[in-house]
Amino acid sequence: MVTEARRQVLELFREGRNLYKQMDFAGAFRKFDEALAADPDDGPSKVYRARCKHYVDNPPPEDWDGVFVYNTK
Image 1 (cartoon, rainbow, N blue to C red):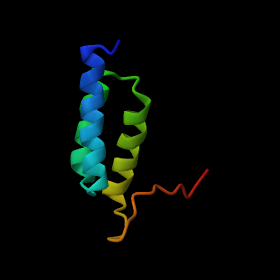
Image 2 (image 1 turned 45 degrees about the vertical axis):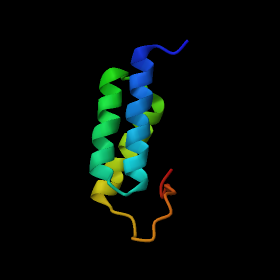
Image 3 (image 1 turned 60 degrees about the vertical axis):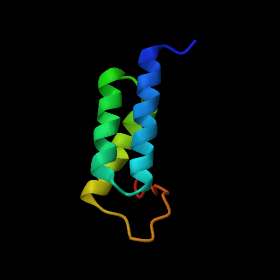
Image 4 (image 1 turned 30 degrees about the vertical axis):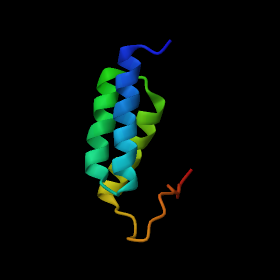
């Protein structure tokens, strides 16, 4: 059974992913931050929050296809 708290995290993550795909990285960062406030151990939100921070500081090209490429190990 999925708890109400988990549903909230999933909804915030979904909203964050939609903003991420639209290249609204600051907005997506806030949604992932909200998800982590509700569940600090949510791994997917941690990953996407870090990616958003990277893209706020280093915007991808206009023709970005949504793929995150690691440049370091």
